[in-house]
Length: 250
Image 1: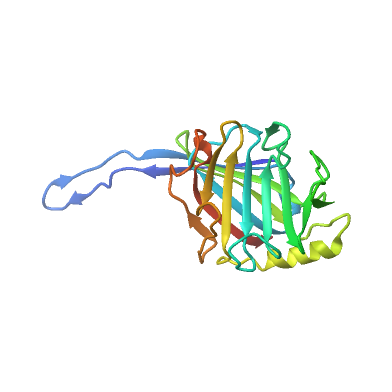
Image 2: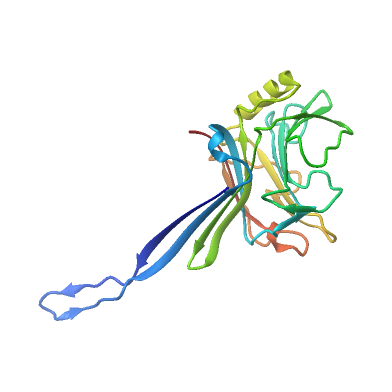
């Protein structure tokens, strides 16, 4: 699903008439063609109660996922690491076994929760499903990938790659584990510590960490910025500029 909005902004010099002085100035307004584009790989109108994360990037991401992933981990228990009781989201190539196609047609979307050393994963009943070390259970109304681009005069000035989770999803099994996961997700606030990793795993691999490798952020508004050009590797699309997360409803 693609939604686009277009608007024109008039920019120009301000004309002033100096009465009694004979001075003045004027300029023709310069139109700015501003175009917003939202894309979803799911029916966004069917999700009425959601949690969303958007990762803003300094450069356009490739059309093909390849072996790329975006991983967002929330340190719910404030332990400083991913452990029991925390929530992790992953979009992209969750198997690492094959080269995936488009973000809008082939991306995995996982929600993970660890309890007593067991990792529980909610996912769609499609794609490459691996069971080793993970208890998978499935939802057909999970939500999915959501992207945003802002274009001004044919130049992309803002872009984000992320996801929207349906907090009212139904699962085919493990209802008690999902209930626990949902309570943890509902507990995420604008100040919950978060770590974000964007990886292009094609050889040689490239990666950017927010705020840094193995470190969780301390922010208060559900938004954090990241310096540009601090990524490692050759693929500059992984360079993160900002991360935003929020709950919403309609």
